[in-house]
Length: 301
Image 1 (spheres, rainbow, N blue to C red):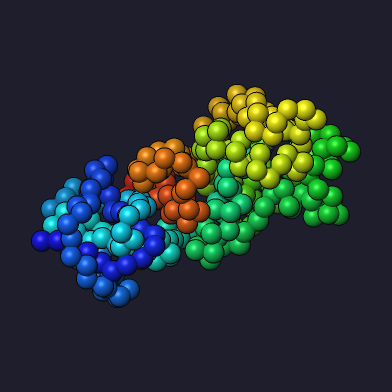
Image 2 (tube, rainbow, N blue to C red; image 1 turned 60 degrees about the vertical axis):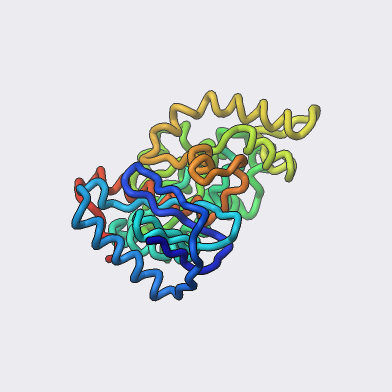
């Protein structure tokens, strides 16, 4: 028996354990409202509790896209697809109940989307959003990061960045988008460990294309006088990545956009929506909390 749940422009596919349930093309369309969708999920959970081990009972949500712009629910295969925003809201409620107010620190190279994803994530969780670079700029009477680098040097900026992180680590219920270089100073990890650290791993090519599109003027570590924007950005990012990759690996959990794009059958990581990435962040945080607490999280608090 197969049922397809109403139309929407974005989707998410339900994964059970590590096994992805694939969609089938020949399905009838049955519009469902939000209440009916939730009832479908509850029924799926009830079935999974009866017939699956604890590891399988933990539902991981991923986003997928469909060419016919419809949401899909396969009752026979325990597979569901829902609107991104609805899924983000419910996943955030689930994870927020287990975070106990702990803040989230987003790590990653410049251009990895920490600010954009951070805003989406903070709204879903009911957290405050803070950009650590903006926090430093505010403390420096509005002087931009690029100007601080130019006038006072990188070491001066890093000192103020560490002080900003110290203050931010004392405040609960925040999503903090950090600067790309925070990971190189050990003292910063002491502050960020007060919360949960999540590394957004984005391929260098995608980062270079994003930065080249907007220019390197606001990126002091990539701003050179010669060379085309893409090549300049790529070479600079490659150099920085070699210095930082081991430090990024120390994050509590990692969201690989390359893996996520593969799961969504997308050729370009830039096609992944910020909401999709935010949901993946919550899934990874949930998995981290599972390992930390040694217990399963409820699907609905």
